[in-house]
Length: 602
Image 1 (cartoon, helix red, strand yellow):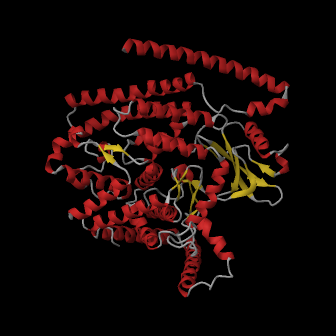
Image 2: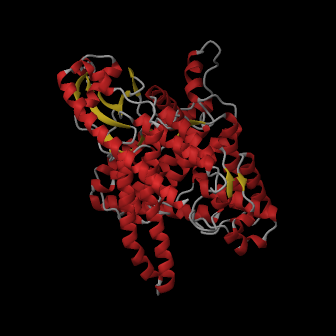
Image 3: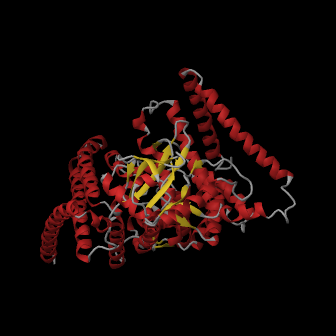
């Protein structure tokens, strides 16, 4: 069997080499033909909607032929060090060289193949709490540093998609150098001819659709074939990601998502009529300048979070850096509370390349293509999980709080494998509890991993909060609900960002107030549906209540006071700014300590 597999693999590689040679020859021929016949530009821009099956299998073979040796060398190193390693420090030094080599191979492989592999690498790059530093550092280039397509190709795509003969019809300026390039698209700065407004033009990469959907189709196929050998039902996970990618590849849908997300983060949870300054800025599309592959939107000033350290705005170890990290993570947590409980339209891809930080440390969330619309029932389930989780954190020794939390996770459709299938855990801890108690502990631990914090390494029932540990509750997952995949992905990314910025944070704490407000008004229409019609229907309106007027006035006053505070602080000497930042950080840390001691009640 091994020889058959090996020979088949060689055949695939030989065929792939032939395909590459044909592709290069065809590219040279097409290049010379374009010089002679400019009228075929449209055919040059046109892309394949799908990849041939042989090319799809070749991509998978290339990826696994480079990744499997990395895993094999780690296993060999582990066996070798068990025999001769004298101390943990010596072992870490031995692994350092392997980490550097493995991370370079993985980064180069992903940059070569691109497609869905970029998405996976982006998640790894944020998880400094799980992966060695060389992996998170080297894979951070995937957040906004993918190789750019040439400016002429971009301009041709824009002209074709917007139905114009020349860019001068719409733009007075169009930057050749991209602002950023990612797995699906790249963005160029431009200026509208008739208004002078600075805008960003997002252009889909030729071939991106075929690569991404082919990779997901491969992953779904492998997940189905290997279902009995995999720890989780990954077919459901990849199916949800595939559906999200379909939306991400249609910029018409992204323009609509921008409007929904802007509305969601601009109103108090539990009320679609009470405006509050949004914790994050969402750029809006320019009307009439969108297509499936081109999107013109508001220009956002700032730098990506992935490059904030390179901007040298402050010392990474200074109080200002700590305060900035706290503000960024808090803004993201508040924004996601509003998304989930204000209509349920959720941005599912908050990796550091999609988060922009302004000069005043205001946060903007870009790339709104990958979103998830939670059904009313799913929003109610998330709300109940958050509330039950907070109840447990206030009284963790009470078996009832664990049981109630576990029941909410069960209602979502999470299913576990029998504990005797996870032998490493069953031998150590499983025998201490009955089967029902152990399942309750495991399900409660899953909730804590998704929405809790990392103040303790031990979860209910002795489970480990390290997701790669042999005692992780994730090893017992047999089925995960498709509706939660993208919300879980967003939660994991925010948790990774908090870890990278060294900010202790709990989404359950950030979402509790919004969940309570949602429970008080569960059937409220989404703000993008309810605000405009209600504002226009003055014939039936009795006017806003005194409470609503007071809340609106307070919101306005808070916005003005923040602006005044920023202006005042900007005028202070650097030494005074450092002193104030240090005081603010200490105050935040004391608040977090009190909250942890009280189980999240404050």
